[in-house]
Image (cartoon, rainbow, N blue to C red; front, side):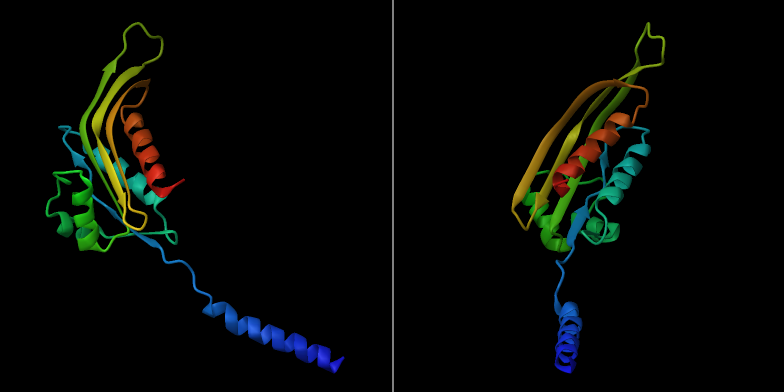
Length: 171
């Protein structure tokens, strides 16, 4: 019986020393380029964009890089001038990011639809979204063109941003 307990104790000690040595996967570094907002008088769009990024790219799976690091890499607060793979690769190299996402908002219009019992808006969204995963080499670009009906002007933007970020994160 004493030998049995010695073996159990030896097994427990071995496990206790081996567990901390087993490494975890490192969090993917994500560079979120600030929203290039070309819609006059709309400050809420940038807030929605960053809130969705913060909600989806969470630690420990993702590690968001600071805005100052990203702004220094792109050299402008107005987003990227070019949404090509080469431009995103440059941002990734300078920041050391594994994933780079960027978005431009060109148009966000809301017009009230007549003859409706409830207040309904017809919303039109135009813009660009691009992402690059340097680990897998996956590049994604989409011209955003969406016209829907709803009751909140920025609902369309929030859904578009959330879906684009989910595609990047693989969720």
